[in-house]
Length: 182
Length: 256
Image (cartoon, rainbow over all chains, first blue to last red; front, side):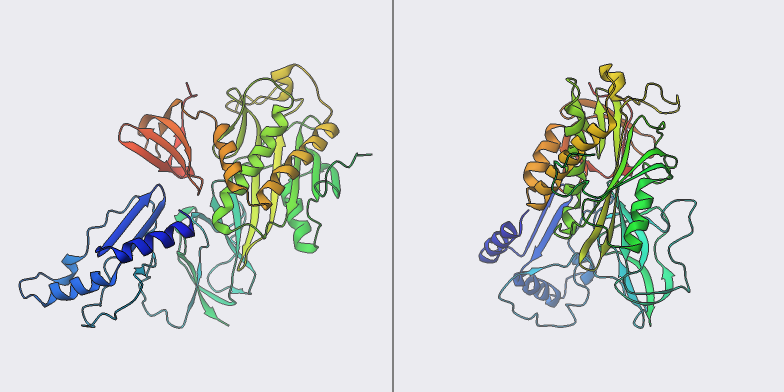
């Protein structure tokens, strides 16, 4: 789907009475919720007979190796008034669970593919926990359809954690490394 | 020596008698200097050529083409990377198709087949930075004059075996530089769609029923429909259409 087509779609949905819209075409997925969705949610939660908010989350079928999909916005019920918005919200495809990672920065995968820690099985890994890396340093390979991409770090610092096992599939924007900034 | 029929591919040409891997040499070159776009590293004998990670590419000295070309595809959006794979695969197909009347196809994602035999392979490496692709090394191996192969290889072939004719490697290389430059410029001009359509046209097994195997060993028969924008193979089977990443499916039989 092109950007223009998405724009058109957003306009169309905005004019419609839809609360929620999903489309899936091969690997491509798009989910849109309008401000009507927030209103409906608030109304439902106001009704006493309603079950726990979590159960109102729309049922989302997740294909095997696709971009993980966030469940319904977790805390919108806490803020009783959803901000009225002129445009529908296009959901960002992921919202990582934040533990106490506040002091760390993340190196994320720019593409979908297979994560490799070294250039070949007999070679040592590009980086390991405790290593200090510089901006622009190659930290791993993400292979996609036999295209081997060496990934350069956008940040400098010390590797605190390697988040993915060698030779495992990774999603777009998945966290690969936790780095303590220099 | 060489006639210059290209704008930039092959203008700088490094040839070695023996090299572990032309891609590795290109990587070293990139780490130490700024080679000009289209720089070629060629080896008469490549001793540690690579296919995918963990698999090797066998080549007999002086009989085949083994070379790597350096590019800077900064224009290429990261999400369009499969177009690069397609353009390079088509460039090798273009070359091979010049020398045989037999059907020359691209086996997903980027092996080149004459009939049911693999005649050429591609290995592309890139460096992906903050602003997208910084550089890319296109490694190409074409079996040209080799007459016998290790029995360990599943289905190798060469131009010689298919046509009964030996070919001059320098001339073939020159022809390849032209083919690659043409496809690269097509990519640079944003002609993803044309590239994608041609790739689909020459996709090995497309429209035919093939036996596949999943990583868990389950086998199923399906029809290859094509690929999607991210390069997944689209297969129509009894439960509908399914898109596969590379490690999610294996073709276990020849199409037909």
